[in-house]
Image 1 (cartoon, one colour):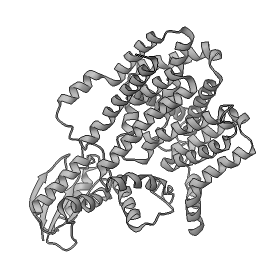
Image 2 (image 1 turned 90 degrees about the vertical axis):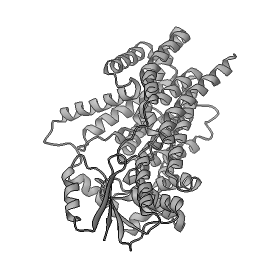
Image 3 (image 1 turned 120 degrees about the vertical axis):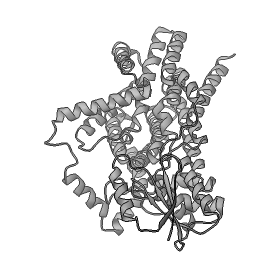
Image 4 (image 1 turned 60 degrees about the horizontal axis):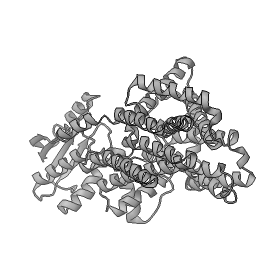
Amino acid sequence: MTKKLFIYFGLLVILIIGCWLRLSGILSNSFAFTYDVGRDMLAVENILANHKVPLIGPTTGIEGIFYGPWWYLILSIPFFLSSGNPQGIAFFMAFIGMVTILLGYIVGKKIGGVFLGIIFSAFISISSLMVLSSSQIWSPNLIPFFVLLVFLMLYMISSDGKHKTSKAKYVLLLGFLLGIIIDMEIVFGILFFLGICISLVLIFRKNLRIKEILFFVLGIFIIFFPRIIFEIRHDFLMTRKAVNFFNIGSLSSGSISIFDVFFNRLEALFNLWINTLSGQNNTLGLILIAFIFLILVIFYRKTEEIQKQFIKTIFVVIGFFLIGLTFFSHDIWPHYLIGLPIFYILLLSLAINLVRTVFKKTWEIIFLLIALFWLNLNPMQILDNIKKPVWEGDAAVYRNQIAVLDYVYGNARGQNFKYIVYTPAVHDYSYRYLFSWYGKKKYRYTPSEKSSLFYVILEPDYDLPFRLKDWLKLREKDGIIQKEKIVKGGIVVQTRTH
């Protein structure tokens, strides 16, 4: 087998493993279909039906501040191709995950050669966090893909020679990508944007002139243009809300020591590290960190210049996240850190590649990598899980919600009916979309507001069970309960008549 064929075979194996890890849950309809996914599907359905693109998209979680429409525009592609089928859209997210693996190989190869590309793509393929971000329909889950594109643009900007004359084009794309990332997740996006900007000033400044800076600003402006129009039309609503948000104290203060917050954030970044690369093994995670620092301290001078630039960028961005989150008073949710695993994986891959370059021990490194992959994948547990029945999951699992609709329509036997939903999330967007799409597609009709037959769908509220009891008490005289059935995921369906 020639060297090139061996490389292609290795990359194919990496893709097959990555494909299986990402598609197994989608094939069994075990992916999450939460209220915000339902909200986004309803919005995209409305855009395609009315042929009118909005200036804003989903809410950011801060009242009065919205993302731009770009997530809806991206989502509209798989929505159109799959005729609104959530499983088809989940396949699209998995496909982006597969492209991310390939992109990891391309980026790694450009930075440090074929071996680095293989290592980088392999870790992306098997990392549990990377798999998770490729298996659910959610805008932050596209960020690892865009982060890799940012890496590619940084490489193009920093490389001399053949890319020199077209550098402005790559800087424009860099600004565009950073804007898109902010539009996918605002906390990660802003911290990442500032970290990359600092890297551009400290590390890549010799590659930038006034022309490139103007193109960089233009790329960002293109992404924010719809929201700028919205702001002008609505008396700068989001700007005023943002100012109020920071005035009431979004930064850490007073009640908790800044040092306690710092160590809390440091622990969050370490937990992300072990979840990304060491199979949640603390000891192995610490060993890998010690390995990286030891290798970089001893052999950093032997590293090629382009690799030095990326190593510096990784530490600048991670350091900025640590500092930025220390002064951020809110809880740190996993999606605030959604793109950092890419930085972790590249850093470890660069250290391993440096060892191979210095010691010329390719096969020994490969055997060590296989052991590390084994620990992360845990094949014995995977084989054991294959033998088990399909995981049922909770009320947010798409398969369970479909089972509820099948039960309701089967029980109605073609009669008109109406429904009401109790869900801890309050909003019933997911059921609104499924009754609209799935009901029309499979059963040829949708619920009616005028019917004596209606169904009460009750999702369990494990955290605050009294809310469900209070909700039912308010509706105890709303029709007569004819039947009550637990369907799947703990979801209860009551059949009532007036």
